[in-house]
Image (tube, rainbow, N blue to C red):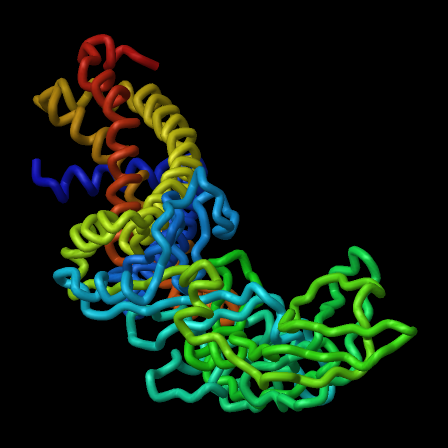
Length: 508
């Protein structure tokens, strides 16, 4: 018999018991639809993650910090794998300070094409963002060298460029949300905002007078009050322009502002008076010193009246400022090719620092996606295995109902393998049609849900996701359900082929 003859007999048998066949196929459809939808989502997210790492160059990045258990962060923020920021814990950090000299050494490592130094704010020079008459508290400011080595995940606008001056900023999307640009982040690009400093500010743009206003008097243990000779100086406004919006989901949705490292140092490297002499007050003669604007809680032990700056103002050099910060927070190096990332990371680690690569972070995310895919696929597979019991039951019932028919075919010369093939193809057809209909239903579901998912993804890390069922998944689902049908029908088919022709003809 030809294959088409076998198929014709099998389809005729399925039509003979339509309701039973439809219910059996429907059970397979449920499992096939679930697998199609779930694995489409997982595959799309996985492919999007890979494309994002490749497009932004993160796959070629090596992050460097003092921590030995560094977790890769595309923003350059040095974070320990345990989740805490680097704070000098001897158990997790090296003693090698990240200096400009070390940055030069790293830049000379073979296959390194660029290096970017990163500094994160430790003192509150900037207190608020001002926009349209409203203020929002600034939590974290990060400065980095826009050399191309560090490429933050920008969901709107662009990354910083080497030619950018100090008034170009990247803001995290949660800042963009409170500024009124939620879901329309492109509208935030080019918008002018104001960075409002703390009182006592003496960085770039500040007026440094020879006569200081009265100092702030801080109650004991009052954390938000900053004393010292310059504490009475007024805050200033620093104009800035938004050039990009960050997807900050990768660093715990922490509100973040990023600016060129030069602008960051200009703002946070505060000038200090060489000496301050205060006029007598409350029968006390006081003379301040160069305590700066971080004098802490002074109580009422120092005079608060106006002071005269004696000896002028001085500002630490950039090298001194960085050294006072404990060195740079991190470096981001970029390899010339992904094949050299591990080699470069190993060479840099010999300098006594911790390293973490974007390639490892990508592989970790792919592994997580694979685990999720296995779990979701396993749930669908369980549904298919349950459906396979229905296929087996259907085929056993079909053998019992067609026992006399089998006897007639055997009496007419049909061989055992012919009978076996008829029932096996019939079971495989049930699995094939169940998988085919399941893939169609799954594709329709993805197509209908696609606009909703895409709209939700625009405000998150899934920007650019297409959510289309890949052809290989369609073929895999149909092949899988057909295989399940074949295996489920094998034993009933074998039973049918082993029937004795004489007994089968006598069966009622």
